[in-house]
Image 1 (tube, each protein chain N blue to C red):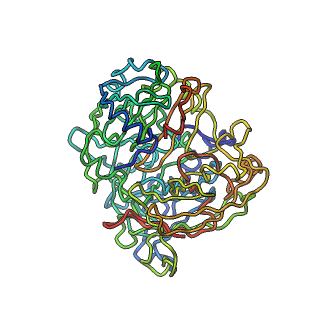
Image 2: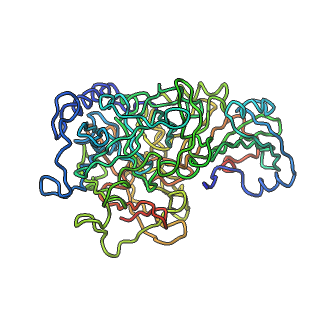
Length: 156
Length: 411
């Protein structure tokens, strides 16, 4: 089993589990987390909602299908500000990024000289791809939407 | 690999067209209609006095299409209809130690008449993703694969075809459509794993990689490990335990191209002996080891399919990211810097110190006609990706997984 790398620190996960809050929702980047189950249904993944304490993110929605795990982070205002994933493939970013997917497509299609892990910046959107065979990973976030006090390192 | 890269992008289409023409009529065994007329005469001793486990490996040289992107290592492979002498040589295959299996654009081998693999629910079809966010889609077919002077081995390969059936949205938004866009005719993946997915694809139809397609309809499918798309090296009768990447050293300022060798097997013949005393760094269950630079340690892997050294340098290293448009993936130090890293197994054993250099990527890359350099790299927060530059000037021994280990790397 692959070890997730971009994820909340164990103590935050522990806090979430301790609170015992779980549901079956998920959400799209930049939208309210109540936009919900839609993504999980669209991607044929099972979703679990957890509350987390402190450090900016107040909820994380975990979606799983096989070894692919997607984590969507929402702040106190309910806005999803980041998505991180790991697994044998990258997830369906058209669904996860919502209206921002078009910006990713446009930016990704531009010329490049590097072949390797990729960091794409398109205005307010940052998308990072990485990993290698059997073990891919990545994350996407909206620069302006990251809550005060949240550290992007926490999304690794 | 979604877009063609380079400042020479305008030439890629022509270059690929020429490569296809070359592959169609210029193989070493001749042929007039795109298919080689014979199955060659590659017995176990080869035909010209050399051992059969030798393949030509070039970086932007004889085995690559003209106009290839920076630091691109290529090989040629002969692909045959299994059990027959109907074969075709395909060049410009990216040698990739970061993935597993042979994948070639379907359009390049359509005249071979390979048979797709049938499974319950239709044709076995695969989605394979890469670290740059790109992905490939297409059916799995059985093929005879001839590596160097070895006899053909019959293995499942992927025929890349983004239009086959209907690719699921989970396979991504950037499927490689053709050689010109991808920047290569295919990929020869020779990572430590013998098969491309492993046990998760054998047990779960929601594995995300294997599908069964009937007409336009595709649904998740399981695939037994031994039947998955396989590293052809692992299927060789003798030289199946690993490979050696041998590339000459190149000055930081770079070269137009270099010619090297890919040796199949380790310790199986007189030409592939592991030198006494060389330290093996064992890989962990992710196929990784760890790399420390100035105290900071990260997960690490070797990847000839990455064209730079990508890692998270300490601030003290003086490695700013290039500010030039189109070069945000690269470092632009004021001068060529010499650095050291410590590689060890995730357990901490098998430690090796590796010296490497990094220069200003813009300066190096703009120095036409230089297309190979060991001194280009860029930022990556989560890993140390030892890309092609690591392999220049080193004999890198890559041991495949066994029943008792996940593989190893030595150099």
